[in-house]
Image 1 (cartoon, rainbow, N blue to C red):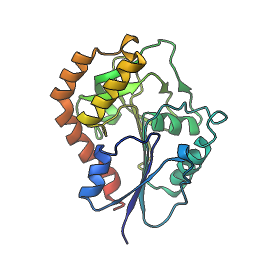
Image 2 (cartoon, rainbow, N blue to C red):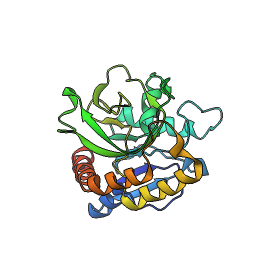
Image 3 (cartoon, rainbow, N blue to C red):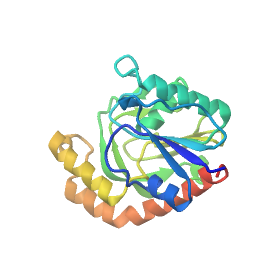
Image 4 (cartoon, rainbow, N blue to C red):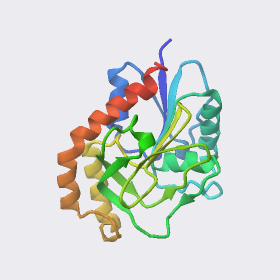
Length: 234
């Protein structure tokens, strides 16, 4: 049976990220759904290799303001109960933590991460991230660790960069799926939104220099992670 990867997306930009490429290389059908446009996420089926909840502009707790998030939480809950591999990226990680009863939102320190920042493994995270890597970041919200989660990684500005629950749930605050082309689009939008004025944000020339230096390592890590995390299901 052909396998599919359910990708819950929060935007309508080009689908040129590393998860899209990984699916094509591994002959996995990328099943992209956008609940914010009215897409239903369906049910857990035998052909489902995993679920990815992407980043986005929505607050994890704003289900009253954005009722479509309830459909995403329904799928998060179903995947966890069925032990289907579930990956949350940025907003997706915050949603998994929130669903499990942990706090998610803007921290008191007010810092943002927009650019490429070094992420360092904890002792418990070295099997996932053996050594520090610079990853693409675009956030100012964060999360507390859910009960029973393993703390996998931190950065200088944000203590909680990655967590795992059991063997089938991983939340990443950073964006290893992002490519150079994709991050350049984010840089263009950041100039329009005034994001470069926020505390903690790297100037564009600095983030570009770091991106060109570290993109290959980010890509290598992400491809290996996807092989391990979704490979057993495919």
